[in-house]
Length: 211
Image (spheres, one colour):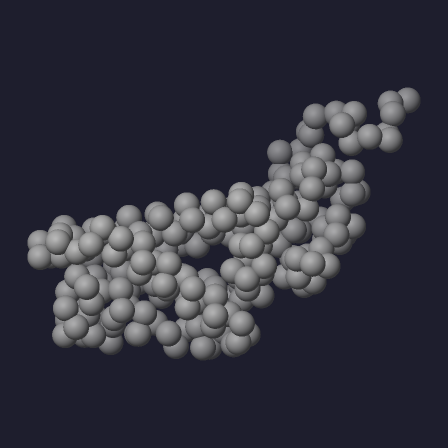
């Protein structure tokens, strides 16, 4: 009989969907109990698996939380990208993308609060994951420099500051635990991020649903 005393002696994982199941369980457990009270036992319970199976994928809780954060942020990015597939002008795409992000955050408000306020301060890996996604949003925003030539002269840090500012504001709003408040931010956020590229007049019209 094989030794079951050490997770390092476990055989290769046969179920390719097991890791996804555990990542989802990390998200449910973190949303329910917060990071400080998170345990392998809770994750295993949500996953419906023995603790040994969870540890076979993730040697510590931080590794599981980082993987869950990656999945959550990547889903935000993909949903925003999918929302912008329609052939429309760049300013309207920005409005649609922001609306998609806000809707996703409001729908998963408890988990979003965990990743914005708790996991982000856990360590370098969590911070790097967050910065990577924010940088990708900044790249999308930088298309505004091509849309309006006069915007090409904006400082190089413009997009990074805009995206980081929006992320910081959303994190503060998540503290309020009011999903409707997140959704209500859309017009102001759209106007804020478009203003450097379009000027205040057109940025406000786009934010209010015009074109």
